[in-house]
Image 1 (cartoon, rainbow, N blue to C red):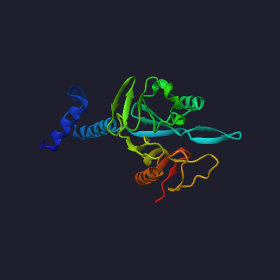
Image 2: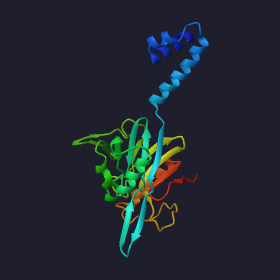
Image 3: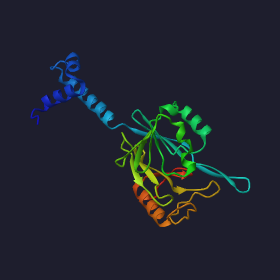
Image 4: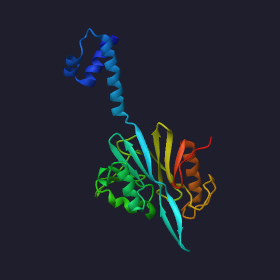
Length: 242
């Protein structure tokens, strides 16, 4: 433990910048300048260790009628940026719209490092193959080519939590994203609406594709308690009522 606060400042700055840079930039007599530099160094180190998470909804999920019996469907697709890592959540089915949305953000499929899939319904997964350089992450596992390893409940290299949310599908998982906006949950099909339905929050709403409605209702309650904002699988983002 360093008992002299001033010597602690010097040691911390040397550790952050390196001794050579420290001696080249400051004299020990200029303590005011050194303290300012130390604050800047600490802030920069904090940003490196705790990169700001940002997100952008690339595609708002939809389920539309086609003719008498058909539908067109693709889920909400999310771009998350953490430091230099680009993450796509639920790449969906609409290849043209996904590629054009990525282009507007200044990135292409090759720039994506991780693809998260909430569950394995085809409308959420068809476009995975676009991302040749990406690892694929689901509720339990990280897939890298022919290799697979269990993860630790977070998107690797980030502080994004992966939450098991069974019900719509047994393997279903959601993401809890800490942002400046608050706690944003990418809920996927824990909550979803058809395009012709009114988007009304109803924990008892029946899901025709659910494998276990009782589990789905528990997952809905859990996410509502965890989130400030929820991004549904099909529909628009909403603020959780308190």
